[in-house]
Length: 184
Image 1 (tube, rainbow, N blue to C red):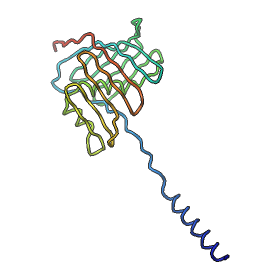
Image 2 (image 1 turned 60 degrees about the vertical axis):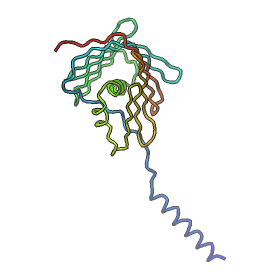
Image 3 (image 1 turned 60 degrees about the horizontal axis):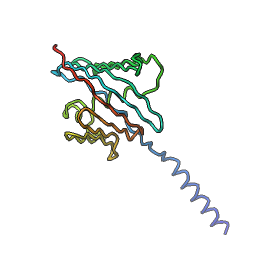
Image 4 (image 1 turned 90 degrees about the horizontal axis):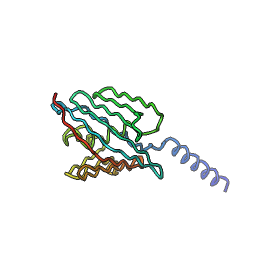
């Protein structure tokens, strides 16, 4: 009997040691990608009302975004008109200045606006399928999947855009109230 107990104990020890050699692979969802400016794009300025909702909290602000073929700039204003956030991206360098300390996923908000507005080819190029991404684009809906899980859904309805970020569990509702194309 003692021989049987020794065999069982050794077997359990070997099994437990073998299990400890295999550390679980943590499944993390990569961040959204900031997209490089698109060459040949006319300079545009968008003025939008933005509502950010996470759980029961809601933050509202006005976003003034300028798109050129060299860079994207976004200035966020509180409903009182006071600027509190400045974002700039030129395809390589991201700059952020948050003057009010209001916590927002600012890089993701800029990436979601780009995902919504950039041409289909540029979006698909930035989210390659060989890295686990899948992009679906139709006239009123853009969806982003990572490893078959819906990560981002953008619903377009005229001047209203509703974005759901499933990976980070929040919504962004955007109401574009002015769109202007500027002479270069």
